[in-house]
Length: 64
Ligand code: SF4
Image (cartoon, rainbow, N blue to C red; front, side, top):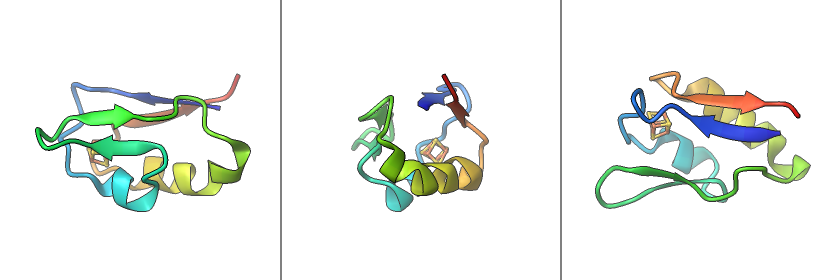
């Protein structure tokens, strides 16, 4: 799986970071960084939760 962010939609509210800080980091300028673009399967549940809870629908999970 690969995590993709739509930077136009992301408003940097860090909800994703609170759910899965191993993958998502919002910096002091409210900019989101994907720390691991292809997270380990062990993180799938929380990555999916973060994607689902993004209020801007800025995150997508691609299967490859
Ligand atoms: S939850 Fe969505 S809007 Fe908020 S920082 Fe993460 S990607 Fe951006």
